[in-house]
Length: 113
Length: 113
Image 1: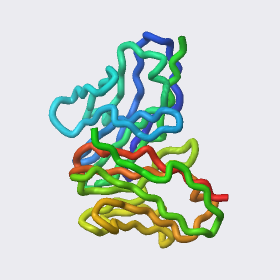
Image 2 (image 1 turned 180 degrees about the vertical axis):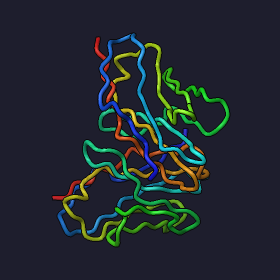
Image 3 (image 1 turned 120 degrees about the vertical axis):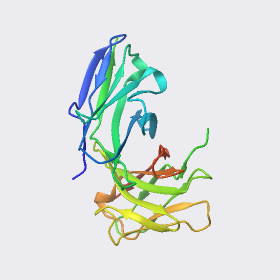
């Protein structure tokens, strides 16, 4: 069955430190991958997406992600986080011929001063 | 930047009552979706809609649920007889094509009492 896995439910990090949020997806013939951020009591905001082409994708707010087909991963990174990055981050994928997005369970990024 | 608009932002209803959640997708988008997020859980796909018909639905989307695009701009989700377990945040989304980024609305928080 198609799936997206986020192994880390919470990632605490100090301000200005780098961070990586992990995401793995089930192997598929074709895959489109997305990272969304959700601030408390708000909707889902698209951070970045991988549709095709370059495996390194840059998004908003200084985030980037790398698509790795051999490891079926799409990890999100930021070289220096801010307090305002504290939020829930969801990895999502659209696989094969389906148009639905499959979401991971989310990772809460907690940035401490 | 174009937005997906959802109304109301919060709805409280009694168990057994019918509710209609409303969404105005981005005007040139062709694919429409409903997702839900039970408090503290992952975002789950409910249904996708294209060319005035359901293109895909999940096992959650049973006979109690229906969707409609009544006037070419609104996209609605109806729950015929609400249950306590229908309490969740419901997100509408749209995309210009199935393989591009999905834009989400800010959600309707449905509370069934």
